[in-house]
Image (cartoon, rainbow, N blue to C red; front, side, top):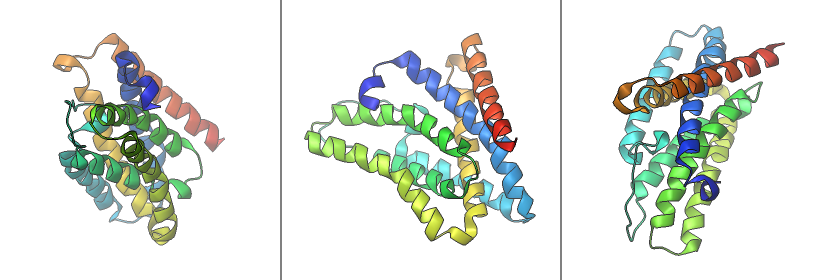
Length: 211
């Protein structure tokens, strides 16, 4: 998908802001109520751990999760950026197979569109064979499903903690996107409407599942 959308900056910005709003709404309206139902006083620590983890991952990915990285022509692929994006996608996928709705899946899918655009933009500029280029993209595409399988098997008894961890990741990414994606930190009308659209669609999908 990155191959077809990378050059469309307007669509990229829309998807980025929309996914940030959808992430935030999904975390607040669905994940938080679910994880706090278990009445575990330590659950909040995992939310904070997810937020802190995302800060560490972004030291590797250089902010590619929220479109703040720019690439130049290089002979070699920036492994640290790929590793950061792979870890980010892997951990996001951990609670997927324990969810009772598809809202988290949609949130991750929507967010990974602009992320894939950034990654493809980097890969396409590298002076490496097409085999390696598509190999990197395939590995990134598999990160989420691998995380879901890991969460369903190894972390099967700890899925609430995995969800809390992912909620922390969502909160960090969403706030960075929503508060730093506009020049001079000014809220423009288009951005406000995009954020509102993300909130409304997330609410309607969650409300529809509850009924």
